[in-house]
View 1 (cartoon, each protein chain N blue to C red):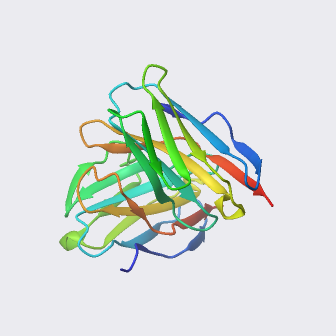
View 2 (cartoon, rainbow over the protein chains, first blue to last red):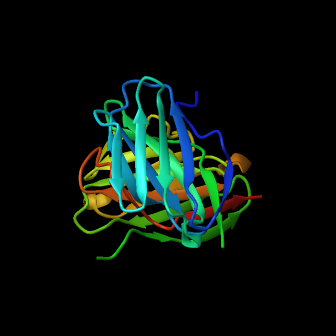
View 3 (spheres, chains in turn blue, purple):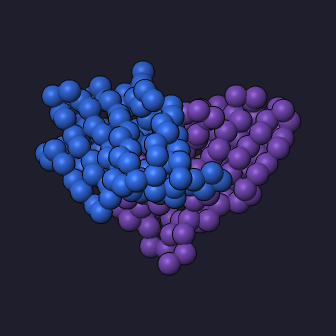
Length: 112
Length: 114
């Protein structure tokens, strides 16, 4: 039962353009959504989050949008840079212990 | 501030052998997590500790996996006996509080079971 889904395994974008990574979820009880970034041979690092009571959160070049009615969130990176090339995981927090449930990840490649 | 430390970084064992992983969380972080990340999948929570008590171990295969966190600091995760399907990266993370969404991850231990 995949509660958090990232349907695009990979995405390729030109440097300077916008990267849009998508995530869908099934559980309406999730109260926080997060994006993590992972480089090879490193652990995931927290990037940006959004509460379920908001529809947008912005931090520099990164913006996360939440559409609760569609159970969909997206991460926008503008402008994309080669250093953004990594695997991006969407995660949702919920349940009695507030554990994180991760999607399968999207590999972003930003071409110079 | 030192990050989450894990060792070893890589381990290759044969099936039915045992293996142990070690994690040292960020100083002062009360909550510690062990995740299993199989190739092509996202991290899956195996066990969560609050200080040295277990908060959630619902997805830990308890017939072969065990974990402890003595004195509420370091933690070890053990697999005995290992199966081929245990091949994965084992990630340790810590946070300042339970459910703290800013979890800080270590580099992981890549386990290969042959």
